[in-house]
Image (cartoon, rainbow, N blue to C red):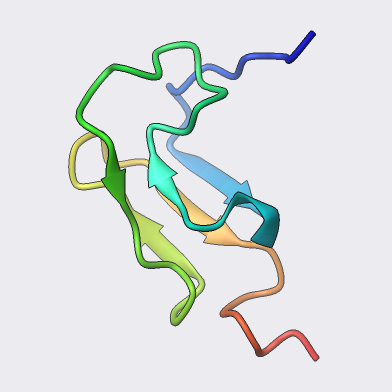
Length: 67
């Protein structure tokens, strides 16, 4: 059984397997709390949801810079 996460966190670290990133994420309890928005995180390693303000950070930083 998949563990659902509260989407009340203000900062969430994601892995490349979560790309493309969108908020809310499907494993959040309130997955329909606001319209789904895709967030560009690959270039900077960070993205903030314009609806709920959650800050997402990419483990290892921007894509292609972890080598």
